Length: 435
Ligand code: S3P
Image: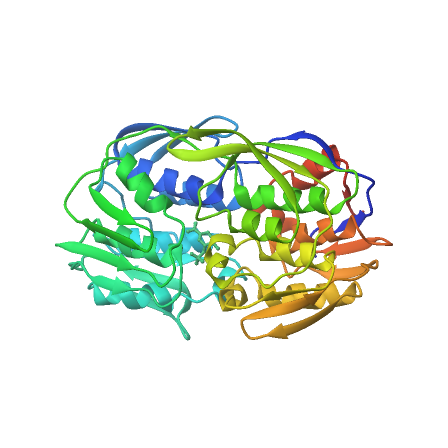
């Protein structure tokens, strides 16, 4: 079942790389352009399965979206109230972002629809969006335990809400704000720890009045979105695998170009630098309202640290890569306050701990984190549990191993990073499809 990789040690990583467009920004660009008045052009769109699934759903809902060329979409917006019903279920694939944000949008429509996802998405918790949206007046049915599929009923009048999220989640915040576009009065979201703010930034760019600061966002219903061109920066979370690989493999020097540097995404840089990494930011500039920079990464010896809890939300997708960095660090690296990792595309604490142990590394698992003891990485077999970031993390670990690592079930890498293995080979890594 699925595709496997064989990955093995490399000598050094070198060159200049462009990683694909940001997944979070690509999802939102399609959504806001679809709901805007007028035609928007999206450049640098991530050609991944997750973001293509979102585009396919908006086509199903009556939006014309042209693929002008690779990474370019022309979206003919239908206006905030212009979506049309679809009898077929809306398939979000592997994408939690797609499903949670869409639930917010669809709660405000005049028609019913059903959101479905793949096996992994069908196990992910949706109560976290169903509860606040229901308090706003939405009606959403889910499987037992608040799991997908979700039936979102239309024709319900929504009221603004003042909501403090229990978990730090940009997806939950965004779902509430998107329902707030259709609600009477003000919608306010407060967060225990600030999360990525692309929804807020992009709503503002599309002309919707919104007030926001780290950990806080407020908007009111009844406005309109104006078509806007979006330039998607390179995805920091995709860059993260190369940042860690070049740090770990002796003799490496790698340049990653125009990487998105939104401060709510770059927690890994703080943590790696505290561990001893040599990462230099060059040519800082702005791309479509987002900070970007080139990153130059040179090999460095790392030492373990306790990851400061305040960085956790700012590196929530980077823990598989960090676990691998910790494996090659001197001493122990301690992660706490990261229970959210258990409800990602897989239980990332358990899948990483199991996989690292299979390669000879000692890991103590806790409910909200792990302690990883740096040590020698051996060859072995890993099950990625269909989780794209787990597969890529072990491809990096294999570059330091003393034997071959076979990584099972890697097809889902195409959800966020199509062409990862080819780019990794171009940089000097040994990772190839198993046949
Ligand atoms: C995302 C938010 C994060 C992240 C996911 C993308 C987004 O999830 O893990 O990959 O685009 O808003 P949570 O906000 O649920 O932590």
